[in-house]
Image 1 (cartoon, rainbow, N blue to C red):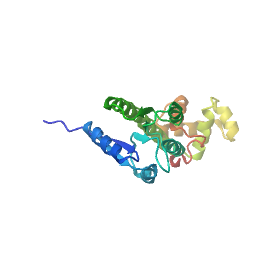
Image 2: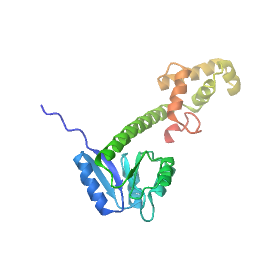
Image 3: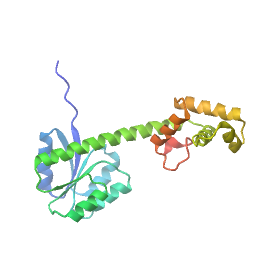
Image 4: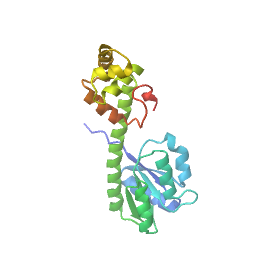
Length: 218
């Protein structure tokens, strides 16, 4: 029985040079990679909300929004997809700036196919790690979003390492009530200890938002 073909990988190609887009589209196709070409950064940004995560091949010198400006915009929008910069003008200073803005590789045109392949292999590895982190964060936030406000307050204080009596005093509750909320919170989260709750909150990466209440909306 024939094995199903693996799904084709994709990459976003942003370059104002039509010849470059055509040649890379062909080259990537040979490697079973679907290239989604964009002539300008603005075109990509217009469709960004509807695009699934994938590596980005980004030219440095383009009209309106150049590669470095694009990197800054992606960082501003918290888009962490791996970016490989391309340029026909070797410039160490530009490469350094690009790396500081989050690019993972810098290719000088014309580049050898094996260099592009190596860069993309790295990019897909980075993307896989990013996707696993995003999924873990999403799951953690969904779990924490099940907590009531009081359960959230109790768990937040107990994660500081204080005993039930101190938590009860700070919340003007009885120690027994604190224990009840603690048990309910851990049961909702499917956890057995406060230490596990700390790990879950770390995975949720709440960015200063209060624990639990409304977390699912972050």
